[in-house]
Length: 187
Ligand code: XMP
Image 1 (cartoon, rainbow, N blue to C red):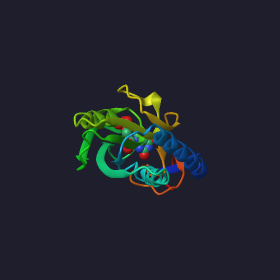
Image 2: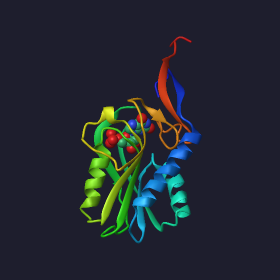
Image 3: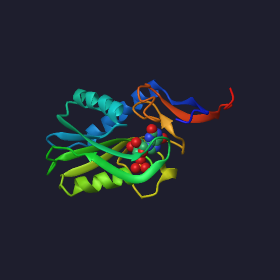
Image 4: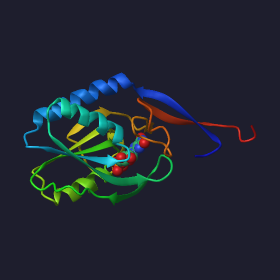
């Protein structure tokens, strides 16, 4: 983090609104689901809180689940994507002929979901659906549309509810926009 900048957080989506929207998203997905069990794949790290809330609601809807994780990253330190997606952990669940839901925190340039969903499709799932909490369509570099979107947001860097800035703020139960205030370097 640049020591000459103070981070300013401006609340964007409240804890209450997140809870309501996640509940509605899970109901939508449960209504569409028509398999014997759903394999939910979370993209770490950013999706961990969203995914934890979703899977507990799938339980309420009586949908049997298998949960697995992929680790992929395209961001270094800061708010700018490196442009290169690295997949550093793969699932060890067999998804052939299964219903699969790939969950990410945010759809930004589209590079991550495009790469990961193409990898998963090679394994011939019966159905592959993608779900993101947030969509920033103005930032898209690769055309990609998620099947389920929690909120469409403007081109701002956001933190909280699993999303970080330089590994900070993931624990916030709400979403905030990050901005920076220049601090006088002499003070
Ligand atoms: P792409 O560009 O591949 O990016 O669609 C998806 C990943 O980029 C990260 N990302 C963000 N992380 N606040 C964050 O904390 C943001 O505003 C933001 N925008 C993109 C995130 O890890 C996501 O999975």
